[in-house]
Length: 250
Length: 324
Image (cartoon, rainbow over all chains, first blue to last red; front, side, top):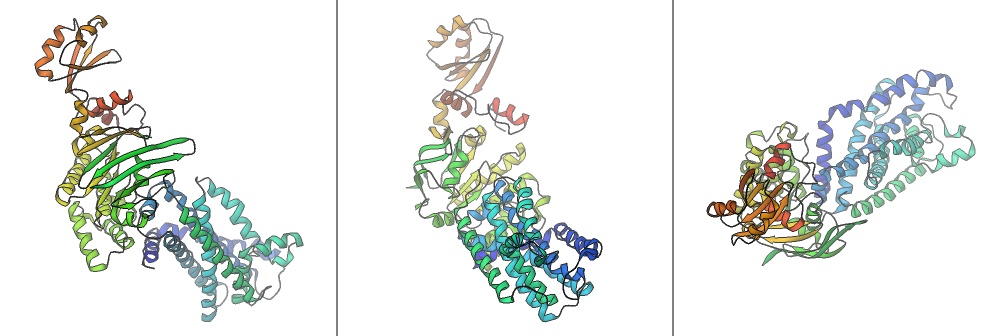
């Protein structure tokens, strides 16, 4: 446990020192919310319920921003391995599962700090959020970011070059975002694309957040939570195994 | 009793054999250098001894623990200074040490005290709370040495500890290594491709090339295999070679470009006799035998031939065998 705490603390210290990274990570969600959400999107939207389009995409944009932050956080270990940064931790007398969990929780913390700030902005400007709903949203964000950080770490641990970043971005992150129902209700997708969306764990995070914040949903909440817990456990386990095999990159 | 004992250690990366059935014993308290050109297998060997990579075959015991089966006990017994920077440069020196202490589960009152001690030891106490980003290369290396020693390891591995440092910082690091060895008795294993470093710091040197140790001994022993001094003659006619070969004090003759290099005993006394047998020459250079000559003797190549590292100044210093 102490080792997990040590690895996590390092990640947090580094994150808090890099204020530029924190600030820049807000640019794109705010653009999506306030430019896309009020501009073009408003005219296209034909969703159900009474919420504005901006409010409708708010859970999706929240999901997107923590997705990008946490997956990129995980992918960063490509750099860590190229340099010797990771060696210091790999050579310490601590288990590989503590390294994975410490790193994953570090990414969760980074992404959730961002998520909480976005939630605060959202509740002030876009839609009022009750305290209890904030807590519920917080719990969903935790599950979501554990899943996405683990995904990033696993991909990062298996990649050997930074060219991977663009590939992962184009082939994993943007598809996950578009098929998650973040920008439009997935019920408007043709049936064969719905399959993709139903297999995407992000769909359930967006659905759960939309239920909590807007009272709109297409799956029952227990299913959303079940899928997120399941995805987190599966990726956590794969991550622990992957880190167990991790050697210094040549 | 050997503190490190290496038994047919082998590492193969796809098609290249990086380390080839290496055998080696290192005694407690020794300062030992693995000396060789880039790609000789030094870092791979160290990485295996530190349990960072798994050997393809063979094994080693480090502080009495098997690197294949008892990696956690090995890790507790060793400290490492890596070749590439591995301190976080947006954290302060003290924060880096603090995190290291936590990773090694050092309990707190002792941890804080140990951090102060280490900062004092490497002369960074005054800059401890500055971000590492603001440190010079030499200061960073000193911080890494402090970090490597913080949990009081039995053995400290240093992978190219002075690579990329200017001569003054290099000397500084050497002083710390010497001090640590003398005052704390820590066993140190370092890799280097700087001849003078191995010569100056180490009790014993293993010359490594293509994954094999090709010569092993104290710097003096290794150099004595060649001779004591080297005389380089330019423009000597080849017909005198036979005559020189027969001189009793000549130990070895080699050709380097348009120079003839002659290894001999006691150049100050024998130079006259040598020159009188060499006919007309354009220039004469006399110097002591260096480990570079030993390397050349065993491998037929210069240690720096295939490397791109180090400044022009460094390379000149090495080529001439001068101690920085």
